[in-house]
Every structure is written in C-alpha cells, then in structure tokens.
Image (cartoon, rainbow, N blue to C red):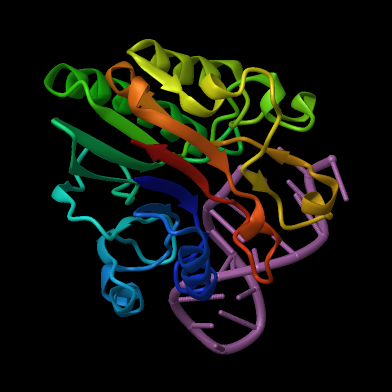
Amino acid sequence: MKIISWNVNSVRARINNILEYIKQDKPDILLIQEIKTQDENFPYAEFEKIGFSSNVFGQKSYNGVAIVSKIDIKNIKKDFIKDNLKQSRVITGEIKFKEKKIELINIYFPNGNPIDSDKYQYKKDWLKKFVSSIKKKLIKNPNLIIAGDFNIIPEENDVYDFKRYENDALGKLEIRKKFRELLNLGFEDIYRFKNKDKQEFTFWDYFAGSWQKNYGMRIDHFLVSTNLIEDITSININKKPRSKVKPSDHTPIELIIN
DNA sequence: ATGGCTGAGCTACTCAGA
C-alpha cells in the first residue's frame, strides 16, 4: 500500500497535476495539505471519476487538509487539537492494515514567520498542543502515522544553507526541539531513518530560480510510530511533480507499507 | 536576499506562504 503526503498549494489550481501524478505513480491514499478551498468547492467529482473518495477539512483561501483515497477510511475526525484561530490544519482517519488499526494524522503545521509576530507564538502554542494530543493518542493506539507539511527543518543538513534559517520559524532551535520531542514520544522520521546522511528536499521556493539551483529544504515528513516501523518497505521523495508546468512548491513524499 | 513568485478573493490590491 502506497500512502503519500503532498502540500499541493491549492487543490483547484493543481487538479490536473494531481490527476496526472495519480495516473503515473498510483498512490492508494493521498494526504494533501494547503488545499486552499472550502469543502463545497473541493473537486470531489474529478477524484471520484478515477475511483478516489475525498474527506475534506477545508477553509476559504488558506490552509485546509484532505484525505483522498481508493481505500475506505474510517472514523474521520477534524478536531484533533483545539485551534485558537479555527484554522483547518488536521484531519485524521483510520485504516485496517493486517491485524492493526492504523490512525493516519494528516497535518499542516503553522509557518510561524516572522518570528517577532503573533504568528510565531501561534506556531509554538500549536506545537505544544499537538505534542500533548499525540502523547494521549499513543496510549490508546500504538499505530500512528503522522504525515504532512511540518514547516520544520529537523536538522542542519535538511536545508541548502542552514545559516539562513537558524533564526527563521522553520529552523529555530526551540522549534526543532519540539520536533525532537515529538520523535521522542516513540516515532521515527522515516525518511531520515532510512537515509542516514542523504540530503534531499521536499520544498523549493517559486522565486529566484530556487528549483533550478536546488535551494530547497526538507519540511514535509512521515513520522511512524515504533510499533509500525517493521512494516515500512520504503520512503521516497518524488521530485517529478515539482518539475512540471504550474507545479506546487512542494513535492510528494511516498511511503510504502506492506 | 525580510526579496521574488504564486494562489485566493476579487477585479486593485492585500494577505499568506517558507
């Protein structure tokens, strides 16, 4: 089974790219972020036509997450944390896998820039709440997969020039510590688990030729709870969609679980 | 390089992204 995570930067602007990606790379479940639309304007029909049903937690203009899947997803929830600003950033659902019940937690963490603004405080509050919700969830279910756009550069090697991000909301130590705290609850950053020193990115800015120069960063992640590690076959960052015409600034990461 | 480029909402321009 192939589960992918992708910040699509508007599902409506990206629909053709997404359909093309599905046709080519055949994911079973898509965890998408930044859909930038309300539920009623989500392109349900386009996905239905190719056999995918959608569970959507939308928002006008900004944010928004969805689970688009060929497989039946049970127990969809949109209240994983209490968001002070009522932004749509987490959608969860359950799948049956062997004898395990896996909970998929699809997330779009706040960006947090600039760091001297209330946006940064919102990110910190948000992360704190998220970590504490995961801690509780893990007691009830040891089979968790957290995937999405974390807006966190885990380590210095995860960005083309760390110096430029050490005082940024994506790279500040206190934010990276929060990421480690999450891992320490009992997760592996599965890309890093499978690739010890390799440098690959999941995001490249639109401007200044960042893609062409490979000025990128790794901020989209799959965190897999300890109990599921042995079931993970592979993790892959698929750069193809970022090279297309009218791309998202993020590219998909693909998890295979068998 | 606190910019430049893209998308939404709207229809000129701001907000947000990372």
